[in-house]
Length: 133
Image 1 (cartoon, rainbow, N blue to C red):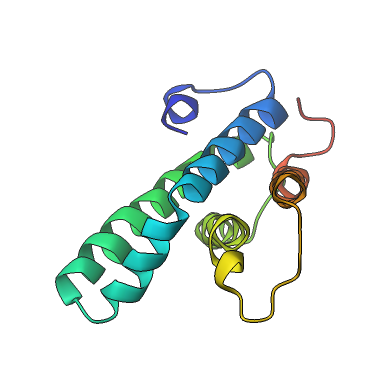
Image 2 (image 1 turned 120 degrees about the horizontal axis):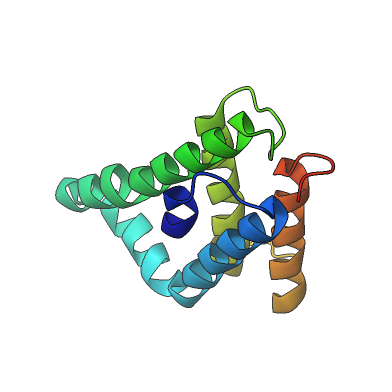
């Protein structure tokens, strides 16, 4: 994501976004136990909540917002009513599939690979403009 933000443009928006989404999913998946622990502990610890929700998560949403805004301006991504809301939607979608579904009290059995591939395809197809590379 940081590398994509450092570039003014891209020759292949689909591949760039897919790489970002895959990396983010892999990071969430690899750290899912710690993420779940932070999410639940932050409710009782205001200092932790400030670091976790206001710092880490908000920071990632801000970076995604900047990235989406830039690629929308370049007509590489479909226009969105609110890039910040789009960033949060993308993040929460990935967090559910990579993290939270494992603690769902009524889980839908989904193979790990299929869960990841479905989430990646959904996000990329939803955002990349028709005909954009």
